[in-house]
Length: 295
Image (cartoon, rainbow, N blue to C red; front, top):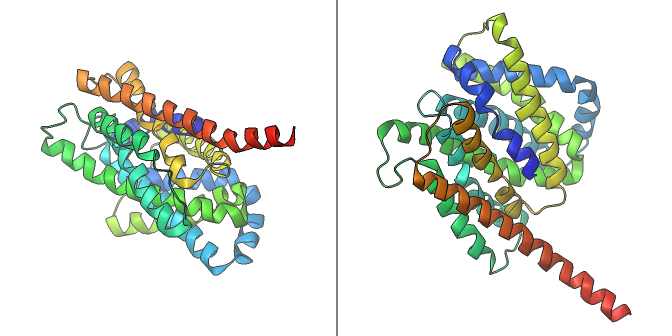
């Protein structure tokens, strides 16, 4: 999941140039069109599995496609028009908090008491990483934050619902249906917003790269990892998304990093690493005790 999240962090390299020449709904529509074409060989089987699934799974799949894929990606792309290449990505810091609440309500997951010792520093670090002046947020930062916050909420819902859907449909069908139901939703968004339908052919390679790398490949890794990770903890692996985004922004997109942002990056990396170590240790203890008892 961390690998998939890191690939998401590279999306600014492709999404930011596209957002300069096209409206956000147009970019996302063509992105989903390319994704559906890529996964079209698996679409008939996925639709059959969806049709025979439970009503709860069918509804959750539609929500993932329309909300967590189409609308969330549109809001995320629009944020690049107001902020720098780093801010829209690192503001996904609120995803863990939202996903924890949703996982408790929807999936009935329980959190260990020590989980907060890792969660709170990670959120603080993500805040410092998000804003150049963390205690003096400007209007343009707030505009970008508003769109990115909406995307974060929808992606958090997708994290929880994705685990629910995956249990019945499997990772591949979940991924294929995410794009399939997302495409008509992007079409509706273009119609409602009055965005354009045309794209210069010169932007086609950039769009295909966006669909393949931070899109299809990243989500493939993500859903494979999600099958083995509780949703409330999975979103903390996604914090590699803003860390990678910050590195890409500074090294390749000429974005600036203040001392507080560097500090935030360090806190995020340290918190996520410590959390992974703690979860692995806690999970391995029962197996170790069982082996000792058997011996």
